[in-house]
Length: 202
View 1 (spheres, one colour):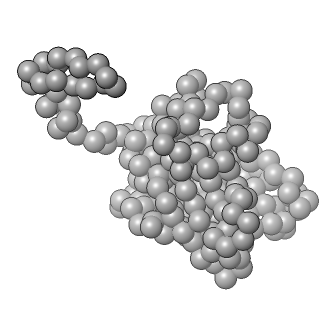
View 2 (tube, helix red, strand yellow):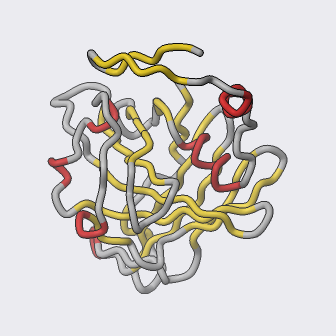
């Protein structure tokens, strides 16, 4: 028998075989769990078009939205320090070798800014976010990397005269590569870098 101290209360606790089995339990190997782990962490990207970008992604509780939810925040490495991109991503399984990433924007981004630096895990409710309908990405595990893309016109974008956006993603142990571009109705590029932004794990 051992004693567990909670605050000022001393509670006797019996430590049995189940306790040690829990400690030795294997990591969840399902595609969504694996992809969520790869997306989580601190990353840095350098491009030939902007200042270096710092990306932070951390787990949050999002009841009603999904079991594997992450808050993603991006900011320029130098400057005022305020994030230029904040979103919630929810990862779910698709078959035995795939996973889907759904993306949400925040009604009040300021309320969650800096969540990855807080001690406690943030909580996000369904009323706090709006899903980017049609912009979900299905990724397939190939040779150790998750690869997927959004094609067609289903992902709406009105930035800089665009009508829709396309995205390509590749996620591995080393990096998260994302290539977002917006297109007009006649398929001319309205926004986006010519090459993917590659976020190297720090």
